[in-house]
Image (tube, rainbow, N blue to C red; front, side, top):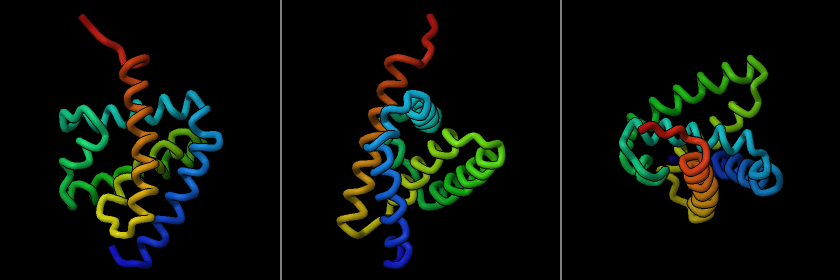
Length: 132
């Protein structure tokens, strides 16, 4: 990732993390959506955590996933489904930061990943249906 791309990523990470910490984490629907989306992705790789999921991705996997998330996010925006678009943006930023090099970008990504991990844990504890 070049410095200019990482600078743009950092600006977006900063805005999303600030929003999550100011109001986003209090939005139960958004956190449910974030946890559910992270759970679906983790289940594709039998990962117990968001970090574990990310560690299984190749560069090609990440690019393909970012492309899919971008398409789904644009569809959500057109349908005026802001929470879904917001959820997808958070996941995409986390994934985009996988190859970040700057300490400040890595720190921002770690904060975002902590929110995703918490949403995933809460989703699995309180919302994910269990059978049997």
